[in-house]
Amino acid sequence: MSKRRFRVPHTLVLIFGMIVLAQVLTYVLPQGEFDREVFKDTGREAVVPGTYGAVDETVTLNAWHALTAIPRGFSAAKDIIFFVFIVGGAFAVFRATGAADAAIGSLLRKMGNRPALLIIGGLTMFMLGSSTIGMAEEYLPFVPLLLTLCVALGYDAVTAVAIMCVGYGIGYGTAVINPFTVIVAQNVAEVDQSSGMSYRIILGAVFLAIGVHHVLSYANRVKADPSKSLVADIEPDPAHTKVKDIPLTATHVVSLVAIIAAIGALVWGIKVHEWYLMEMGAVFLGLTLLLGLVGRLGLDKTASTFCVGATELTTTALLIGFARTIELILNDGQIIDTIVHGISGPLQQAGPYVASVGMYAVQSLCNLFIPSGSGQAYVTMPLMAPLADLTQVPRQVAVLAYQFGDGFTNIMIPTNAVLIGILTMARIPYERWLRFILPFMVKVWIVGSIALVVAVAIGYS
Image (spheres, rainbow, N blue to C red):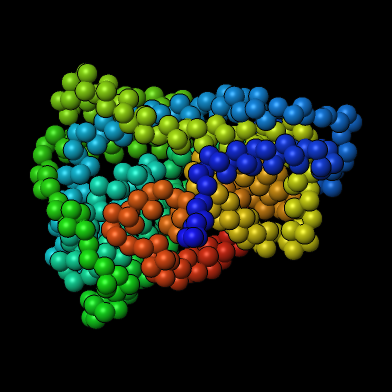
């Protein structure tokens, strides 16, 4: 009889399990709360250290409370859910114009006869896409092109995937204005949206240098001795080495200018007028109409393409709604402060520097179970924000720890569908990828921990 291989459950199963666990905890943990103070200058609320105590009136949740809380979770997260659908539709229309494929393909081909430029430029390009507009699934179509270029240059499939995934991980880990991660986390933590941008830009450059060194060192070893390749015994899929040559036209250029202008409008609106999801959604809707017009897609094709793009992010939207439910149940059961109080004790004794690194470790572990960036923000930030207050860690640092934990581990965890999809297309077994990426992750964890300690020391806010 053959042994059944263990399979990681679907992310929705894991999150539903957390919802059930949250309700069980309301029956086990004592109900308590901190006093809170509201700062007059910002109107933001923070817990008062040393004020934890039992609640005046305890509550007992009924057996089916978790089921009734799930629709409430969707209602509470409606802004980000609708935003996800709008962005999914907008990106689908952008892809339909062919501008992304033509531009990235053209850039990669121009770098193709300069090996070092291909690696440096490719990593930078994918990092910027993830750091600004949260690109991830959109990178899948470029796997064949990178495979073709890297193999032709004497590299291997691991090098091709590394250019894409390491850039993607750094982009999410140090995101400047990613609307799916940093903006959501800052909102949940009641931190000014898009604040702290300068430090994240500096960190992006630092981690990019680490990524370039790691990928380039491996690529050069493989080129010097092909037997050093981690996939020397695996031939690339011929179907994924045939690449369409899409010329970059004037229409594509106008579409790209529209995307860049939209990003600029988002940065300006968030910084100057404190825009959030409603206004950002309006920008992407306007962008959709403009792209449909410029790309000559017609009204019907623009509409149908928009719907298909929104449909592709249905799973992401569901995960966000379910994840939001966890906080609701912990609040309903009056135990969220109890959990924060229990965690904060040892961390307060260790001090804010150790606490910030501890948050990074917790977020990295959580990403294994909740690879959705927005979903993880809704699960963890309601705990990490008050924990930051108690441990004298600026809330902005707690958000940065979330970014590191969510973003960097995206390129290692087997529950990330984007990573597994890319590896499958490139015919790279997961365990071979781990052998390549683990040394990079060790570097990232060390430098990331130092970055958090520095952030605490300078009062990063």
